[in-house]
Image (cartoon, rainbow, N blue to C red; front, side):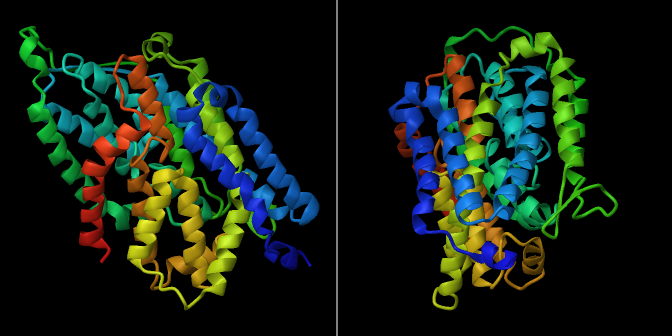
Length: 443
């Protein structure tokens, strides 16, 4: 009886809240920013609860809503500790701003995104990057930071980017991403740094500025103790009861729901903020609004996307054998969705289709593990790269994009509008790199 309830496909119209929420996320901050900023929390929560209650009351399905909430808690717990710990660390690089320095900075920041997440790396490094280039700071500096640090950089570990962490929660092994994605990662980073070098050579901002002052070439760090909390948050990710036997867990419908990891992460976030260096927090203009926005929006996303996942699985199952699921199709479909929607739900939706085509379900961890041992696992490479890399195509492709934009604008940088970002930067710069990735790795 319970199995038949779980397999029951919801009506198509139940997807409307999911589509509506994603459209509002895409258009609200641009078309009606005041209304959206005031009401986005209520809108997201209400839409999420409507879908959740429909499952509980109408479909009599309590399993998927509970699993969705459990995954949301795991998701937001990690982001919270990374965000708070990074926000309490003040960095200042007392060095001369030049192309070589910036290239090294961006490369190391992109690498660090894999250990502290794109959210943590974006919050931690964007301000010192702007301070480093204070005499010649231009919008392109922020754009390339978004490309490399807020998106592409975090594709080597599940900690790095939300789509990969969602895959980890569904059953993808922790070190699979590093083993399988490092070549596309390095290819994209090198190409983007080459283009960035071209922009740097055209920047003559220092020509009219006296930079004769002596640079100590030292790195000043305030709030070093937060590095400990960062380590605690990152290390706790490995405390997965589905991977480590003996860890306490909540048994639910044949699954092991983690809670030790989440308690550690939220406790670390609380302790981190309570004992953070206040001077560092003030210097970084730290506040909770960005992480609150992510929390409220993703609460709605996790619940409203349940019917979309089920319907996509059902459609893929019905079309099994009629549509060839190839690396090209997976790469571009996940990429296009991630460009105009958030890349985490885009990843999950396309992953659901890929699994369903193989006769498996995304809602069954055993099925995901079976897929990881199959000869079709190469499709997950194209899915992961497409979802993560294309998240940089627009401001709404990945959560840290808007965080970085907001921080830069607070510092006085005149950032491009939503449309200008696309036609001036992502289409002529990022898209050719993404096409090269496709030609080199997925044909």
